[in-house]
Length: 86
Image 1 (cartoon, rainbow, N blue to C red):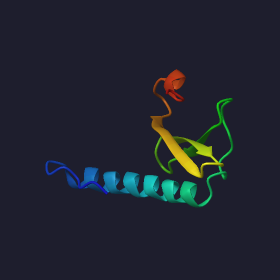
Image 2 (image 1 turned 90 degrees about the vertical axis):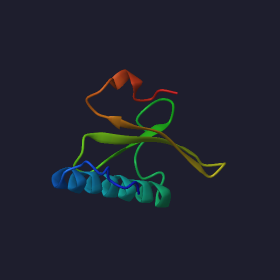
Image 3 (image 1 turned 30 degrees about the vertical axis):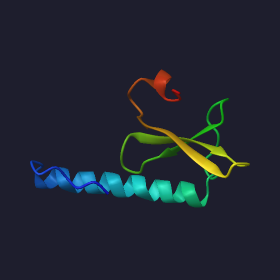
């Protein structure tokens, strides 16, 4: 996990830790159960919501290759057309 920047104040450090912990929990959940979250696009992408924050982890599962490809971590209010970008 990245260390907080030295100039950050106490509350910012706490929120950064909560964000990274939530994201890490999602990634562990995806690694253990990659098909848990349903497909949300015709291209086979899946979306996992990051708890407490307006972010989605966009990923794709290649079952035959046993690979999980994390495409992006997308802010839900920013550029919805770019959510499934290449």
